[in-house]
Image (cartoon, rainbow, N blue to C red; front, top):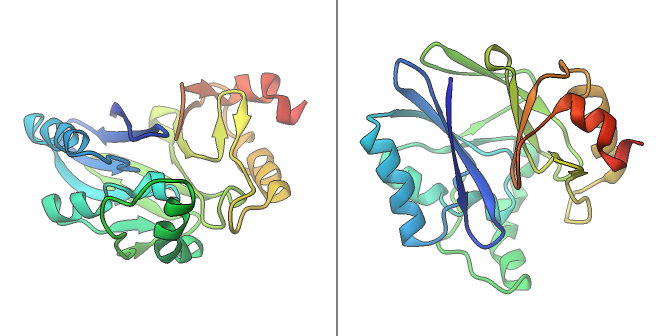
Length: 212
């Protein structure tokens, strides 16, 4: 599996494009905000002749869904996310205003609900959905066992974990979920987070201050 990381918007969010030798692909968290960011993402997909099969959201906080309407228009895909985060579609514009910015477009509905244990297939590759609530009620981590990596959204970062003070967050649930669902993965598993640099499960078990 090949991975391309983009860093989008003012927060900034990591957006990932994944594909394999079949050129079938998925996109995770298209946080593209500006016209330039949207065109950079589209150009990469078109130039590499990728066939997008899934638009995946780790969760539905505003900064991770800015580009959903654009991807739907350009590639005909609807977002796939956990139903527990569905209220954020209506909440996002209000939360954005409170944080001092405006949604570039109105959020769009979830097209497919993702549940814990679901498989997302593209080409010869499969991702497993792991539900780890706490940062948001519906936070999903995507696990690629063949490639020994996860895409953790805002659940787990290098040296940190997601904030739990937004609507629907729960600090205890977040820590418990990381310990029981993520720290049980092999130590060499690479963690591609929603913000910041990659890390590994083994590194976070030893060095992350929230688990000392």
